[in-house]
Image (tube, rainbow, N blue to C red; front, side):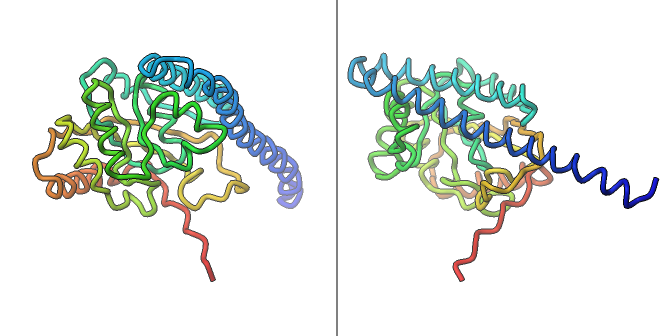
Length: 268
């Protein structure tokens, strides 16, 4: 068959595939937003009606369950493939900081979907978001806008026996394999006297990485894989611990399935 004819026949198929892929992408994003909005409508009255401890337990369980359903839906429509079972080993274990690298916006969803009862340090802008914030407040997730208060609340939550999700980078990875680590992970672990469980998140796509434009079509399906790393004892020297943790992440992510983040848009 003539090469030009083959190319001509392939173009409609490529266009159809592109439309189908973008439909799945926007369906996934819309579903997450819709679930968050519905949950917020329920969480607002529950925040005031339920005792704090009851609201915390129920709020975290419901977020965990909703995220499991959400990821299962992404799998069913063929948008993503998930290998997250390594996290199940942490269920029922004593209080600890769960510390993953942060290649994508979906990372917190991946971890929370496997660990019920998990606490989380969140950006204050997310807690204030109308479609996500009410559920986060009911679950007593911790805002990151005031360092002293954040550390105090995180330590108290850990001493109550919960796990705490804390991304040591504080934001999505800006440069492979990992961005600069912030001192909060060391300070919280030192004050709460809990170990730090490192987690490696791998993906074959830069979708929702730092700088990713939402209108850009990713290559589907996207694969996400999680593996457990070393568990560090509670630190005595915060600075030395951070340096050791940084070196460990860089070694553990060398050669990992981890695309380069998108370049930040120029201001010029």
